[in-house]
Amino acid sequence: MPVAFQFAPQDWQTCQGQNLPVNQYSALYSLLGTTFGGSNGQNFNLPDLQGRTIVGQGILNLNGSVSQYVAGAKGGAVSATLSTANVPLAPHVHPLTGGGTGTVTINGTTAAATDPGPGSNRVLATGNYLDVDGNAQPVKMYSPAAPAGGGTATSIGTGTVSLTGLTVGPNNGTGATPFSIREPYLTMYYVMATNGIYPTRP
Image (tube, rainbow, N blue to C red; front, side, top):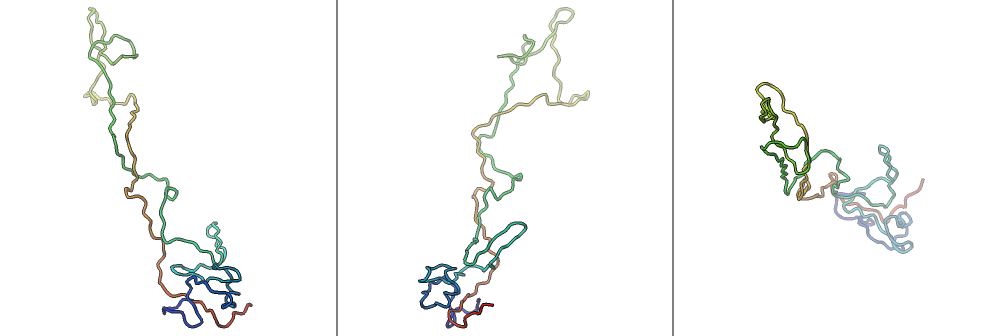
């Protein structure tokens, strides 16, 4: 029973897990047994409600999740720390450190082309054709990205650049910090009668 004053009245004791001898509190032992701890036939414990809330005994079915609460069982926590198993797989940002610059080099030459296609140790070169007089003339293959006569610049290929020495760090540099999950509370004394009228079973 909670009380607003800060002591246990005569024939009462605070619920702080005290260990009591059976031979001195046989009537109370017959009610509690070792539900809250102790040794059968020698001693037993009172409930320890220091910093704890009381939950009704029974089975709770909440949205298909079934939890069984047995008298004397302890559970719960005052704080929690999120892990990757608690975090949904949603888009989020991580810092990227290290050598984050990649360079792609495409080689070419202004010399006249000598081969009809790509090959080993071959680079892009200036294409030529022979005019009617037998003179080599350059093939026009390039244009401004936005030509005056119209047209649209279009990608003609992609490539993959391998970057090494990169480190992907957590999005919180201080690491996971426990946070309180305790509900609002008001501290009072819980006491239990150790001597008095024995409760009658229905």
